[in-house]
Image (cartoon, rainbow, N blue to C red; front, side):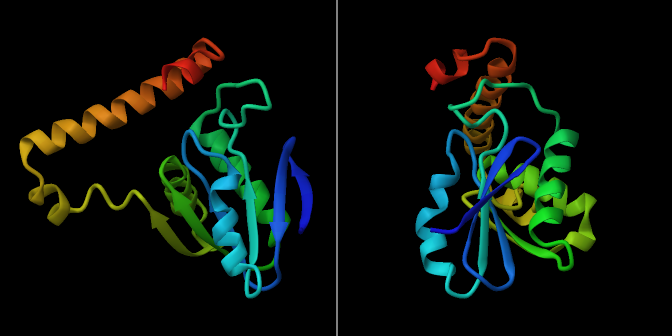
Length: 162
């Protein structure tokens, strides 16, 4: 078992030694999503994971803006790897926040590995989708985004919606 540090009142789990890999989970996941990945990487990499605000069922939900989420990710990156950029490994909604952080703080990210969600703005990808598929994808993402947003308006309700 590794160590834990606190950044902006968030528990940050750290396992392994080597170049730093920051793992951002999606919704409705938790840092436990990455346990198998950490097991595979920790002999060669320093694996860092934490619960994104609003995703941790042990804490009261609170609304968080994209700016605040990027600030938190930056604070974690600065705390765990002050002298070197990190690799971001992203999943689902973690991709959204991780991509945004990487775009804003290019100097702090050496590479991005995205899983379960990719470059949805790619021309080749968009041209490959039929209209029905586009509506199905939009409907799925709209449902998840709505549930996430409603959670900031009515704490606990989003947990019962999904």
